[in-house]
Amino acid sequence: MTTAYALAVLAWLSRFLPRQWLYAIAETAASLALPLLERRRIRIRNNLQRIHPEHTPAQLNRDTAEVIAETARYYVDLALLPSISPRVVLDRHLHVAGLDHLLDAHRSGRGVVLTTAHISNPEVAVKALAALDISAVALVERLDDQDHLDAVNAARAAVGIEFLTASQTGIASALRTLRAGGVVCILWDRDRQGGGACVPFFGRQARFPVGAIDLAIRAKAEVLPLYAVRRTGPDRLQFNVTFLPPLDLLLKGNRALDTRTNTANLARLFEPIIEEHAHFWRVPESPWAPCRDTPWDDLHPRDQPAEVGT
Image (cartoon, rainbow, N blue to C red):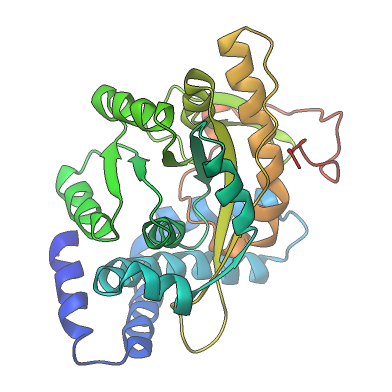
């Protein structure tokens, strides 16, 4: 079953079935599919064990199953959100904190790189931008399965924001948006294309893409972190969205070094967030493996967060 067909079926079913039923079906399907996803399950479990070495095997197994269930819920979100207006999403489905950080950064006219991790569904925050009439584009990773990417981007585009593949053309368009004072949305925590930087992450070196920081440096834009977490309860289409203060970029005039340093700061900032919501962190590859799992003697404990602007 192709992604496009699955999304079309879910959208069609949503006309007849309560939303809660669709999520229940997706969660059941994810549970039944676990034996077929053993390699993915093991990789996710290894990630969770790195984040929570104190957890028992039973806890790790439960959290791994929850990550896979959350991925299934994400695809239900993709099918449902295009039929809901941005204003309704913002007013009825999002519980937003720190919105002033976004509005203040946008009013500065410098351009804003809005960056987040694969926690729950980060795209719901993008839908809020359309409701606030903020000009924005989103850069997304290239995938080997072009049909899958096209289907997902078609569903994403219905939220009212243009989604661009992170090609030379897409990056050039993103830079133009930033220099015109607009917003570019980009995920920072999954380096599918390679070429990222190895930075400290939970005590070891992990490789993450540098696109968010590189765009901000090149366009002299703000970097505004955020994260969205699905709320517990019968209505699965409810999210807590938190906008954090702008990241205080440390710039020394060496672009390569500045990019790596600030990517490390971004990873440090998100460490406690990912630690708290690891069961919703939908990254099925090891970010540590490309760096050969090199240990990192962190001179700055994780209870000392990265510097952020006020």
